[in-house]
Image (cartoon, rainbow, N blue to C red; front, top):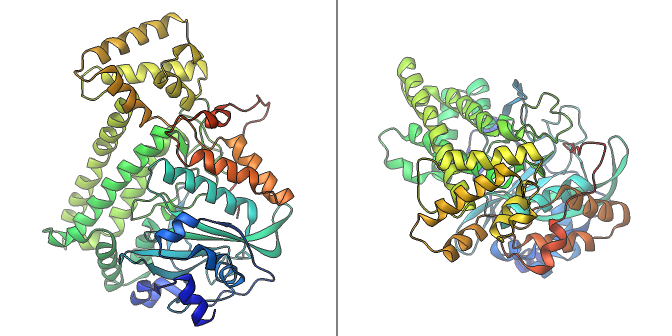
Length: 490
């Protein structure tokens, strides 16, 4: 990229990750693709990063997004990390992604710019390092939906087609996703340092994470315990937010848990329709390890692996280090439950705590599961004061529950209007329904028609608006004899 074009686009890149010990990365230049073409650009995100959307839409912009041209200040590298994948520990790393560096915004903030699907790296483990268009567009759609829902997430700046095919079960069009994140530090990065690094490597990584994400912990008596507690607090809040909107990550391996507290690595993810804690969409999760109802527990398991990795930093005495780690992990479930209960109260218009709130909430969820009620639309119907739109309307259990709920609302000083407003701001009217996502991906991948995806993104951009034009995106899919399945897209 010419210096003039780089200046016009607004790239202002650095790569602080290169200041870590060399064990954590491999520097390399991505192999060029045949004919990069911009498919989707997130113009609002570009503006927030200090980038010029029009310049990014040029052929130079597409070349950067595909890895064919490297802007000044970028130092492309593949990050090394490890991870427990479905409970089995292994050495991993960026097998098809490169971190260009950090874009420094006009306000001085730093955000990772990563190319996903940019080609082979030393960590590819026999893979081709490329990505298919469909999974990259899926990540774009779901991450945009999560951002609009107010859930911490990595974001997608662009998807660029490569003009080349990738071969999976079939021949598919290739693409590169440009991902924006607070960082790509993972629980698995610390596991890698603990297993293959030296003591000074682990300390350097922890110091880097503290500086980047938890600078307030520098004043703590035990900085590394404060780091662990900070990660636990953010993950407890994040996973509670997932549960509150019915989001299923699908592959909660330790390498897919970000230290920053953002949702990361959208693979076989999806949103639940009918409420059932056992819901699994991922084709590779045959045992339901990462089912909807298991996500809070898996969060704790992953965080325990982080605690194990940094034990030498917590205390020189191993027994005391273990005691500190166990104490921190023990706080997770209380934090999670507090976040989840607070969110569920808000979904029901409840401002304050009453002892019987747990049973009120569980009573509704039990009915929803028994009747196969749609999770999102049930809360939407209650928010709109249309209980007749629920599948269990008219049943005796629902009538009793509804009466108890109304009595509970009547005991709080806030008005009914206040309660409805709280519910509207807590219950999304629209989510990225699986059949709508597939419809958009099919149109884009098979017919190069992005209008379906654009309309979907427009409907998802303000999920709490309850706008008339969003109504068609609230409808359920036609019943099918086959369960919906998602795939990692590797």
